[in-house]
Amino acid sequence: MLGENGSQRNDVTDKIRMGMIGGGRGALVGAAHRTAANIAGDFDLVAGAFSSDADASRAFGVELGLVANRSYGTFAEMLEREADLSPDERIQCVSIVTPNDSHADAACAALAAGFHVICDKPLAGHLDDALRIEDAVHDSGLLFALTHTHTGYPLVKEARERIAAGEIGEIRRVAVSYLQDWLSREEDTTASKQAIWRNDPARSGESGSFADIGTHAFNLVEFMTGLSITEVAAELRSVIPGRTIDDDGAAMFHLANGASGLLSASQVCNGAINAHRIEVYGDAGSIFWAQEAPDTLMIKQRGKPDQVLRPGANVAYLSEPAIAACRTPGGHPKGYLEAFANLYTGFARAVRNYPAHEGTGCASVADGVATMRFIRAALISSRNQSAWTRLDGVDTVTAKQ
Image (cartoon, rainbow, N blue to C red; front, top):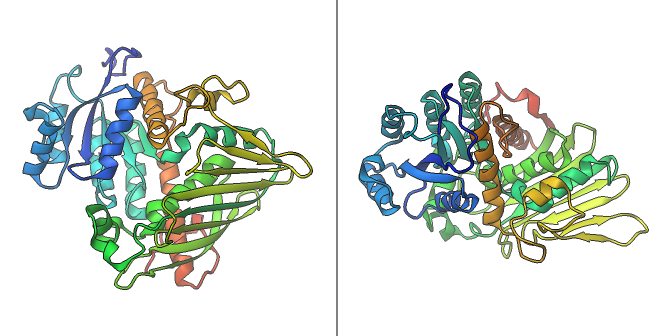
């Protein structure tokens, strides 16, 4: 509900009215966002434009349980008609779950219409569009959240807290990888809607696997270490015949404190289902975490027994941010959708307290722009045969120059 000054009322009994752009029939990401919002329990999906096919969009909205006159054919129609509704009826935020090429148009339009935005990663298909979104966020003064899901896991938050507290000392090296096999065969290129648009540069944008999962790895490094990646030396390539966009790559990188690292992202590694893992090495110890075993965080120190940490709402040794992200007691597995829901919970808190909020609990638009600079720098470096490329110098350089 809106207060008299137009700000959100801090009333936890009121669900936030949400509209969705994208996420129609067969869309994996849209279903994940809707499930996460439902787990969070703070949102009511009341409107949507779910497909580029207007008839299919309207039909799918009704199938989801929306009233017919709020199941729209286009997102432009939704934003215009919702803005005309009374403040206590219209949507308060928009969830954007479209392919990369339409993130910028949808986000900028939603912000201009006066609605907060939570958007699936990456921020956009191209750095130029990411900068356009950043300008729109700043001009509107509204909330913008980017869903890098793995930062919602309790033990990822715990690792961040322990690194910030100096438990492993000064960071020296980071190794992060995100490997999959779902595009490892030639026939996989057109095996699903998700595969088709991700392998189409017109829809995916500047990059393939580096944009799709490499951005997760990049964001995890910066989130966990609290340090920015400053430059990269990369090799991106297309392994499967007929593809014109990268499906495999690796990048050496430097962090702001001078530490070194290696990032690998590939969707052609047979046997790797969703193998996202990170190792952070400091001068006093190291931390290990893997997404396929998210309930284990290992801390190692020379000459001492390894520590194995487990999450749980009743686990006293965890930090406050980690405990707050635990939805079940210790010993109960914490899954992907629960981590995703933690992002929606943080976004809901910010919406309710807007404008006096303390962040969305998600990646920011600035984080999203940083990932797009990373992609652009990696592409430039790869084109120049792995030459070191600084992220802060790529805004005016195209990936194809």
